[in-house]
Each structure stands twice: as C-alpha cells, then as structure tokens.
Length: 229
Image (tube, rainbow, N blue to C red; front, side, top):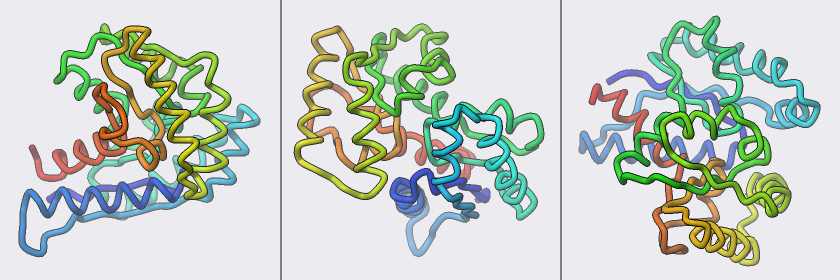
C-alpha cells in the first residue's frame, strides 16, 4: 500500500470527510483491520482565504508548496490537495514537488466520462466557477460546463459563511436544490459539487440528476492509486 499525503485544512470540515472516506474505502477493499497509510498536513485556512481575497495566488501556492515538500520528505508517495479551489496553484507546486499530485478535476472528468456526461453544472467557490483553471480543464475534454451566473455570490457565501463553519442549514439546501433545477432546465446532465464542503449539504438523494461529489471521487481515486489499481 502506498502512503497518501493529504494537504488539508481548507476547510478542516471537508478534510475530516477525506480522512474518513479514504480509510473506509481502504477497509472495504482489504477488510479486517486495514486502514490507509496517510500523512496529513493541515494549513491555517485563514491565511489561505486572505490570499484568495487579495488575489495573491502565488503566495498561497508557496504555503501549500512548503507543506507538499514536507509530506514528500516524510515519505508520501503522492499528494491529494483536499480542496477544489486551491488546485489553481498545482502548476506552481509541480515545479518543485517531485511526487505526483492527484488532480481533483482529472478525477472528476474520469467520473463524468464513465457516465457519458456531455454537459455538466459546476457549483463551487466563486474562484472555481469564474476562473478557467478548473472548468477549462473539463471543457478541454469535450464536456460543456454550465455556471449559475446569477447565483455565484450566494453559493460562495453559503460555502464560506456556513459550510466551512460546519453549519448545515435547511434553507441553504433548498437554495442549492433550486439552482440544480435551473441547471437541469439549461440542459445539464449532471452536477459537480466542485467545492469539497458542498457534499456536506447536498447528497444524491436530494436531486434527480447525477451528483458528482468531488470529495468522494477524489478519495476513491486516492485509494485506487494507493492500492495500485
């Protein structure tokens, strides 16, 4: 079994889900008392979020780079960054980090292709929805991406002010379900929960179209790589 290096804390609420699901999936595969070999580096999200607001992505990348190098030195075989938004700095990290970084968008694209999805809704932070570092990666693979333009600020507010603080509110679930209904009317065949906290609020049972929970998908890909599958 390979050792998984997790860079978490963005937010720690969703990092808990990563740790839980990776260990559960390892145990499903191997049985008995088996669990995952994990090294975890957890950053102070306040520092990262201030960099995001100030558009200082290189600075935030340097913070993650330090943690990535520590994990590599400690014996991690590959890295999983436990957030969608900060995959913006993966190209920066790859200049100095020699072990593989499992890209969350690539894992999600594989899941979309497995269900032959041609148009998908993308929900996430405003950075993930507005900037090209994530959605363009999907578009380049021939999948059309629908963005809820009129709802970006509300989605972002729910993520940062509620979900990152562990607040799961019924009204916010209704907001997300309504947005997903809009996506279906716009021709989306599935919805990407493109922020690792959204899965705390929305599950497949809440909506009719296929849900692609990036935390779940990323965790599964990490387990597959750890077990050499």
